[in-house]
Length: 421
Image (cartoon, rainbow, N blue to C red; front, side, top):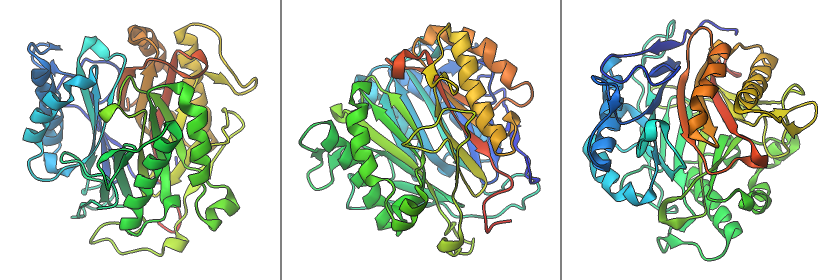
C-alpha cells in the first residue's frame, strides 16, 4: 500500500467480542466501519432473552456502545443495514429503532435473510462518520449533509442521502412511485427501472451525476429475475457520454433476500463519490476528480461491473463468487474450498492494484447455509493473519450457479485518487 494513513481497528468490552474473527470498529480516513451486531449480551456472550424488540434493542445498544467507546454519538451514523429473519418483525423493530435515532436519521437498508448467526432474529451493521480522520490526518470538524428529495419515495425512518467528506450513501430504494407511494405496476423489469429512477432522482436533486456511483448493491427475492434486471440495468449504466467512452461501470454485489419491504421483488442501494466534499472542505473541480475502475485477469470478470472501483481514500470490491478465473466455472468442492476461492479472488484483485489483504477494512459474507460459518472461519483467518477487518455475515436462500458462499469487501486506499494528495 502506498500512502501513510493508518487504519484504526478497535474493540470495546462493552459490546460482544467473541462472535467470530472480526474487529468491532475499523476506521480509515473519514469513515468508520462497524461489524454486524447480533442481539448478544456482552456480559454473558449469549443471545439476550425476550422478543424481537428485546433483540433489536440489544443490537442497537451494542452499536451504541461501540460508537461511544471511540468518542462518537449515534447522530454521527451515516448508514444502518438491518437484517431480519422475518420481514413481519419490521414494525416491531422500527418502534425500537426510533428510540436510538431521535434527531438525525441515517440512510437505511432493510432486508429479510435466510439465516443469521446464533439463530438470531435480527442483526444490524453500521457506517459511521469519522471527522477526526486517522493518523496522520489532522482532525477536521466536517459537517454531515442529510437530504431528501420529493422525487423519490420518503421513509420516516431513513434519509435518502447522507454525505460526509468525499462519499455519499443512498439508502435502499424500493420500486415505489413517489407520486403514489405504492409499488410500481408491472413485473420485475418495471420494478428494477423504478429503483434505478429513484436513485437517479435522488442524485439529481443534489446535483450529482449518475455516473458518480462507485458501488451498487442489488437485492432480489429470486435470482431467477437477475437476467431480466440486468437488461434494465444496462440501460442506466453507463449514463453519460464520458462514462460510455471509457465503458465505466460501478462495482456491484447481488444478494438474494428472503423478503423485501412492501413485498417488493427488488431493491437497490448505492455508494456515491462526492467530490464536493462536505463543509468546510473546498469544492473540487468535478472534471478533475478520478474514479479509478480496474480489472485483473487473475480474478473473474463481468460485463456488468468492474472488480474494483476506487475514489478518494476508499476502494470498493465487487462480490466474488468461488469462480476459478482460468475456467470461468464455480469451483466444485466443499464450503472450505469455495471460501478459499472467494478469498483468493479478492486477494488477486487487491494485489493487482498494489495493496495487501491487511488494507481491507470491511468484509461481507453471504452463506447458502449459515451452519457453514465455522468451516468458513477456519479458512478466513488464514487470509487475515494480522488485523481483522470489520465483518457482516448472513445466510441467503440462494447464490448464483449453486455456490455455497459469496464475499465482497471495502478497502482502504491511502494513495487516494487524483487530484487529491
